[in-house]
Length: 475
Image 1 (cartoon, rainbow, N blue to C red):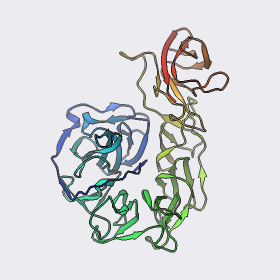
Image 2 (image 1 turned 120 degrees about the vertical axis):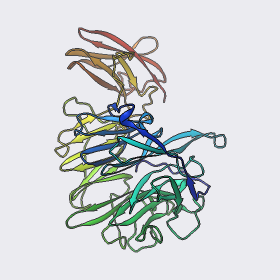
Image 3 (image 1 turned 180 degrees about the horizontal axis):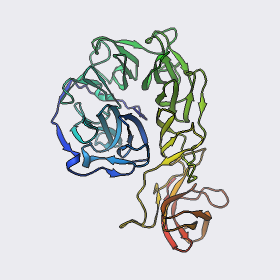
Image 4 (image 1 turned 90 degrees about the horizontal axis):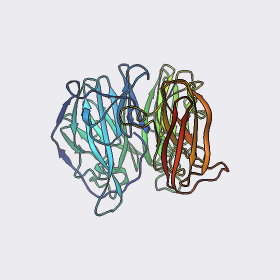
């Protein structure tokens, strides 16, 4: 599960019957090389394959990050970004989402585009439409399986289960009330896990636990215990089991109560009592490497080697070989195993095998100078220094380019009158052949933010030539 926008909805859904669409990936379009997108919101692994949910599709690596391949609509997935990912053995469940503008709201609303499942490691897929009476404001944020039953948390669509592997779905409110997400916060679910054959569901009204496959429920919230969770808005849950500990973790955000606050909450006794930590941090996801705990937050990735008693915040991530940086603090996901740590951010994917002393950064981009693509382009474009690639109060745009041999690069930015605004890099040595990028913070040589408008930039490659591009600044 991942970054969540709080949306209010007023409709009910009871049961949904669907038509299955099958796709044999091995007989048709092969996976596309490379990472699908730079917003990596989910990471899961099984059988030596690591899967990544991104804003532009599903990706995987089977060789520890040396190469990546990605899947989209041509490979059996529904269109849109990946909003939920569940992996076990050769079974992969994926939920997708997008946004739309309705006649009633006249504004952008999220909607679920459906689910896809593969039971053979991604070779063949079955695709389903989004369960519920409407997909609008009905996004599936998490998936869990218990005793052969598939459970999904679909916000406006409620907590739903399928006993026939996705062909039909039934709404199961995590309490004794009739399903009504417009009035009951506990009917707006976001997260779900199975721990020791127990189903846990996080909603906008707290944490719900069922020991009998969803027939009866116990609710834990910020006001009904002496040692409660920090907040009732539960955006993520996770289970950590070691030789000495059995812990359920939750990202507990402030909801409606005056005494609630953002934090991480954990229980070691099945929910009877909770401990809170990382106060005021907005957590998005968890990862574990045996006894080590990782928490992905808005301010970066935290690590604890003592089950949350003390925490360490990883410093800025820099690629050891290229010098490239992750230009954001927002960390959405993580995965750790045998000392290797993967981090999914809003600005790409990072991997370390030595506790963060060295990093490899993987980023999705269109290769330059191949086919009809130019030798350079800027992204994001249009660019806002107030919104894009935010790090330490600055925003950054990338100038992508490629080299044919070892060379030196100089990049300059000009305004519409072709007056020099700034020199981004001057005579920087870069190897070749390869694709590279340099970043600009949208400021001139005096440190002032430039005005809105169109700007031109030149990429001079020594011994090769000068190539031009343009970027629009919109703040």
